[in-house]
Image: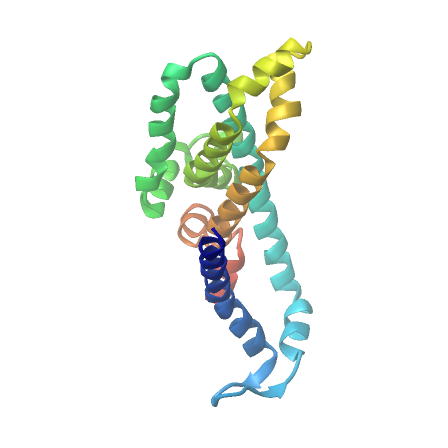
Length: 225
């Protein structure tokens, strides 16, 4: 038992080191003027000072943060309610819902952006707004990641049994879901949301095709810089 635990701990430590090395190396490189040998030379924080004093970059960063938060919040809420309804009331439909939620895996950003523009570019009102189109596109792209993370967490906590126990204590199904289930799956929601943030932050194709240069995110700013 001790040998197995030691081996598992070593594997985890090696994995953590492997994942941290690129991040640490990038952080160190950003604090020096050059790194052409074994050790970097010329320690400076001037790069950070220049970046944080750049109003255009800060505005772009805030735009990216906002455009990341809105689709994630919408997708998490819709996914939670959908999984609640499917798990409690329509368990036989779960496999079909899963198939539908996995479809965006196969959709390329170029195809999705062109399709959305073809459908809504000439529409008047809120659906014709480029920013609304972009939020909808991001909701589609991150749906598989949000869905799979929340679904796995719900299966891990045995949601039907917990809701049944809460009902025996006088709570309604919906109350039990939000006060018992959601707090128990918050880690899964957090991990899925962070993954979605990474996807949206790294996007270039969707925002470039849908909004052009009228709404820049970090990737477009770096490309044009």
